[in-house]
Image (cartoon, rainbow, N blue to C red; front, side, top):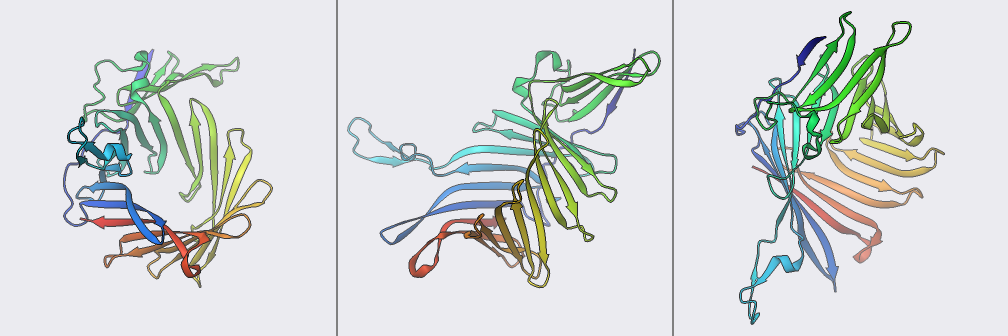
Length: 356
């Protein structure tokens, strides 16, 4: 049996710092509460995103701040409980790490839990020869079957390729088996056979139990995304197809469930004169589910997002602000169904953005 191995990508880790752009972006989310006419703003979560010299994300960390009161304070002397000591009111929730290839394309993303050594999942990005994204594979290394681990390959070694594939052929040159491996683990394999007419056919597909999700992208003749299929271990559990106008703007996104039945449809309308885009979301019977209107400024940056329910009632409104460099600086979120003082909408959350 002949064996061919195709190495498709390899790791390149960046540890440089940004000089021309930003080093870090900090996002803070505040919840707004009111009691007896007094407004209180509490920081509930924050995200720190770090960038390299190419302005690519190297890692990001999400912290939560609204941990229980019992975890924010501790008695200095528990026996007499005379005084309380305030603890650090912050807890790390998750941490992402990103890696790129020599062409600057994202090839892997890792999610870690509260402890940096607690790897939750790994995600790999495969590209077509024209550079278009082809697949996204996510799996949990802790659940990989022992038989699917490639001997002698350390998945934590950054010099190893993030993904590759092997093809096995019989003596007549026909393909017998195709394997896809990611960071030292065989995640998918396909066994082929021929029918009585000599036609090649898939005999069996094998998927490692660690596989969580696979996204597959297909494109039209001019390179626009035409369809995205979500699957797990060979079974599609959802997909969406795209339609565009002559300017390359989205006209429609059609969503399908695991059975291929229509789930919902998003239709887009554009008003260039008012710099407004409207997304109309309907169910299979064409009944309105939701309508979202977005307005942009002269630099085509979103400044208002208004959401209407199925009865065309305005239920939520978001406003965006930008700093002098044109970067997003804040998002205000309003509950439009609950009028506040003097009929003004109630502010329910604030998100701020800081750049270093």
